[in-house]
Image (cartoon, rainbow, N blue to C red; front, side, top):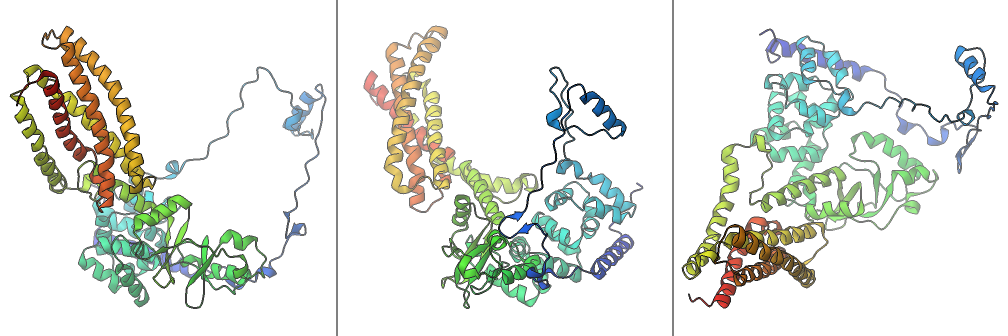
Length: 566
């Protein structure tokens, strides 16, 4: 095989030397004057600039009109460069049968600008490192992280080291914990320290929570003392609280600052902050007293003080609030960032919208897993071993199997007393009842997760589902009656199936659906009331309960109609 292995020490030394040389060149390039040092008032304005009206509009170009006879000649002269005047769009009379004008070239989608993994590997093998960096210059970090799913493991270190510092840090955040551990183990202490300097602290905390102990020790050892103290504080907050997902890298002002000074402050610290679109105003003791947006700063007079333009009614979270509740605030109000305060109302951090989206995705995946009777897992399906999947599924399957024993007991108790032809309809009743209960439970669980339904609404929910159950029960009961008479009696020639039997089956089905809807809507609400996750009371669990209840309903009606004794 002619491909060189980039993990060889000689190749890696050459690659590392090239990267370090490029980094030195970038750092030695003269930087533009820091914008924070340039007074805003000294910036020259155009002559036609108005503080209140903005740039004055450009005058409309003169409209050139031609007669219909002159137009062809003028177009020809213009195209041949003979000085003819270009006609405006309004001058061109519409043609009835003119073909459609060719569409402009569509801009390339991000996917069309992303090079193939094999092309990048070829650049590494041929030592075309500058071409490699140029090819990935405009590729989003999340797409770069996906390359590691395609390239051989032997190329991981070389691939990652060739990324620019900031790009490497952003890509690292998007990787799986397994891949992150592999990359960290390939780093020197200096490389690890450089990358940690580029990471936001909340991302560092997220990485630490997923790493084994030996990797965590390396990360903390190569972090600055200040960062280490912040990391330890963030890790000390209760699990799944707002404190565990917040970042301490935000922009903070004091109320007496002017707009000009605030803008200069943003320019001087923006590179190290997670967001600058929403900034916060605190007093000398860091108590949160207001917020101001970048838009508000840009449109306000430069000499105005922040206490005169800030919003003093601020929605915030506390460090101990559940992170799912915090994410719901983002969903309700459409925030970009949300301030987090401690028990003394002192600003300690912010939660950004990307972290809120991650929380909502995690909670959704967790709910889906529980609704399918599976223990939630954070590992992707293909990377989860068969043994781990077995561990996630077997507890629920055992529980459901044991709970299904109640249905077996009921069926065994009545089976000997029931005529054989009545037992034929048991599967249809159980399946329909289970499906009806699942519909109600999933609807209520969704309402609970969105905040549309609370436990105090239980009577309204029951009344609504009872009416829905009656409508569905009557509709399906009529269909079941026709099915029993047409299929079971006429088509299958079962003479034991009479009109009375069909009525008993239809009535049992209708009543089962009403009971299933009632159980399906109340169990999730009761689970929320006693502190359980409502998603547990979903399809498998509801189906098991409704199966047993549908048997009792069917056997009770059959006993009443046919008078058999147990």
